[in-house]
Amino acid sequence: MKRIDGNKIAQQIIDELKKRSQPTKRLVAVLVGDNEGSLSFLQKKKDIAQELGIDFQLREFEQSITQEDLEEEIMKLSNDDSVGGIIVQLPLPTCLNRAEVIMKIVSAKDVDNLTGEATVLAPAVKVVQDILKEVNFDLSGKTVAVVGSKGFLVGQPVIRWFGDQSLRVDNLKIKAADIETEDLKSFLADADLVISGVGKNNLINAEWLKEGAGIIDFGQPADLNLNSRNLSFYTPMPGGTGPILVAELFKNFYKL
Image (cartoon, rainbow, N blue to C red; front, side):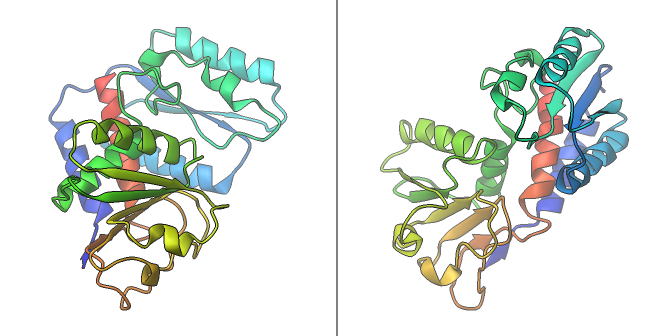
């Protein structure tokens, strides 16, 4: 069973970026409130920016900021020629309309492709691509189960990407489930690849999976019970998808 080394894959991406011309424009992250998880994730982004010599700036706003004021701030960044990429760190406080905020990001600076209109893939999709390439996973004739189909950052873009692949790959089957799905055990029983972005600890038990299945976990650690099944590969937590996700975001920044 292969343990995916996300730090190794991420460093390979970063090393490749170091060979490219360094972007001269700023990468600006917008954070509303003081969510600890968001702050930790932003620190990782700041560290990579420093390693690459990129001007990374964090704009922090109180949770009490109004919808109008936040949208105005995003529009200012979108119209600032010195800014090459914009990150709106999610989740936003529930009092704010996420969709309306995202609409104010110009697609040419949308490194997360939150708008769905950028010329880059969502980082979560690129993580899946990187891992499948790492393990030489052939999608032909496979069943892919995505748990967390309603997820804005992982589930939705990943399902769209696999839907596109199903038009090109023979006998590729995609199934979608969410935290409310009844009998998740039966749902996952025939899956060759499981992708989870729900963020609920112990939601998936490896004993439910078929021999040789692989699992890519973007959320909380799945209860893999690693000795109970002969999985082909899995992503650990931490050190799995997270580092690759951040590295791919910077790859998007370079491209944009």
